Length: 183
Image (cartoon, rainbow, N blue to C red; front, side, top):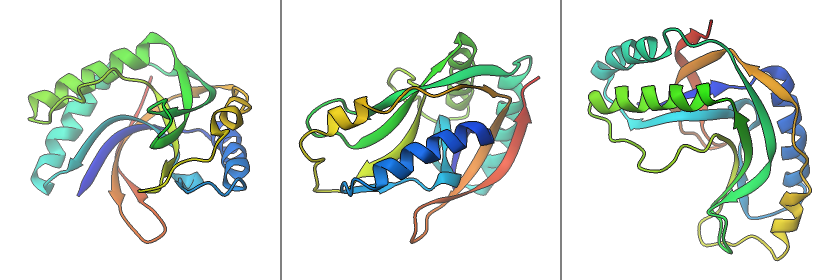
C-alpha cells in the first residue's frame, strides 16, 4: 500500500483552492490536475509500505505530534517545481508558522528510525495542483499566468492524517488510515 502523512485542508481553504484549480483547468495546459477532494499539504511520503509496518508508522505519528497544537497556515500564491523552463509540478505555496517545519522534522526523523529514507531536500510546504504530462511542456507565458493567482486566506491546520493512496483511472484517491487532532 502507498502511504503518506499530510495536513488535510479545511473546507474554507479547499473552496479557495478549488476556485484556483477551476481557473487553471480552463487554460488547457498539458497537466494532470489534482481532484479537489485530494488537496492536502504532504508532510512525509513513504511510498509502498507492507501492512506489517503500518502500526509502527501510526505509533511514530502519535509520538511526533504529542504536544503539537493547531497551526496557522496561509496559501501564498502559485508556482512551479522546479522553477525553470520545464516545470513538472504546479503548486500553491503555503506559508506556515515554524511549528509545521518542526513537526515535519520530527516525522522525518521518526520515519528514518523506522527505516524510511529522509526526503533529502528542504521542506517547502505546498499544495500540489497538478503535474505536467510526461513529454510535454507548459506554454509560453505560464509564469505570468501563475503570478496572477492571488494569495489565499489564512486557515487553521488542526489535524494531521496518515493516508493510503489508491491509484485509479481518474487519478489517486485517498483513504484515512489514522488521524491525529492537534491540540
